[in-house]
Length: 507
Image (tube, rainbow, N blue to C red; front, side, top):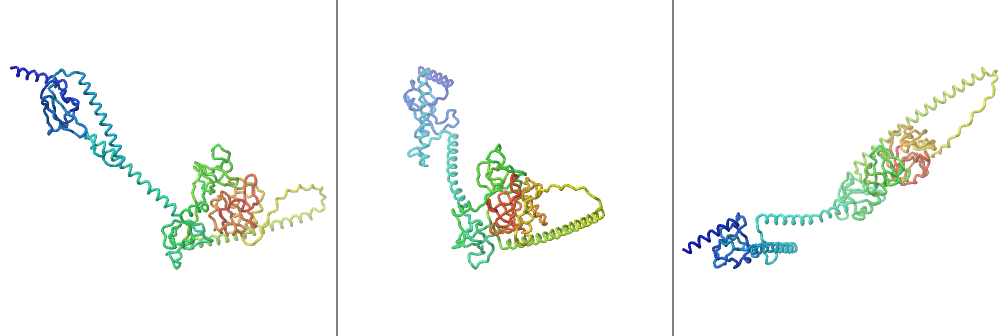
């Protein structure tokens, strides 16, 4: 009877406890032998809500002892449904809670140590096994590992990119010859000549075959003897000297300032299309040369690039020479026609003057008997400075002689009047217009007319001498006539007073 009553009492107590706290998770070492009342216990391995309970894990309690199944070698948690009495003290619950928190913190520290060791070695920690509590924990760790692998792969890719850029720089090839080197169709002196690579012309190195380099430059691809070109770092250094860094104006009128500041005073003006030589670069500004001196322009209004001479194929050379000859003949014909018209005008003017003199003589005879009061002589006009005569023959000399008669006339930006005011390109344009030749009103545009003569040493009277943002007319003896600045007007200067970009011949 007592056993029956005892069973009923125990069952009631168990029911109350289960209603109040049906599941209580504790560590085995915390409860070992701590149950005050003997009873039966059912041990399951799983999570607190019981969703991942393991069906194969069971245990019983005998004389206050519990059998458990381990989740891992380092951490053992059990779910205990105990038929304990309501006499378990609050102190014991607090002790269990503290132990649980300490255990969790210890596990976190161990996991951190383990991760640090794995990152150093790339292998799982010796004698250790990662504890994965839930499926979510596993996914997080997998994502972290994937990110680490991606970062390492990205770091490994960076080095080949840098090497490829260095190879591109090293692929530059520049000719170093007195005039030009032949580009051949094969790596042999017997190979067909397919083009010419002029001195300081640039190209790209494709490959090396013995004593020959295969290159590509302009519209030419072929082979040059290695001894006539430089490559690698030597070519890079030479490019700094022979490459022409230019800024092409892409706005209607560009202000050149004395310092790199939009509030700085204006040194001069340059029109759209002008080509300026760059001597210095800094953020947002480039230092350029104009007739008034060196100043700064904003990179917002210019296109900056490096200008190299490129190879020319045999076919392209033939086309160019034929076109230049055609243009030269047209210029000569136009100049001859203009000369005939000028002579006709002079003859007409001479006839008109003779007729006027004859009429005045006739009128004087008829009125000779009339006594006239003496008339005061008009004041003499100040004579213009005598024009410098250019020696030599040919149409170029005629152009130069015509141009020098306007020395002393004013400079006007954007103007083209030889008497009332003109700028540099307007001056050369108007001079050549008198000979039936049309030139663009731009110093940059006049770089492309006619044909190149190979520098100032080969210049003849009538040639256009081009500078950074400026142009003049060669008159011989190392001199030019040009519309210089508002303060100096049209004047004669030494042709080498500043670096010459090119010399172009019309006739």
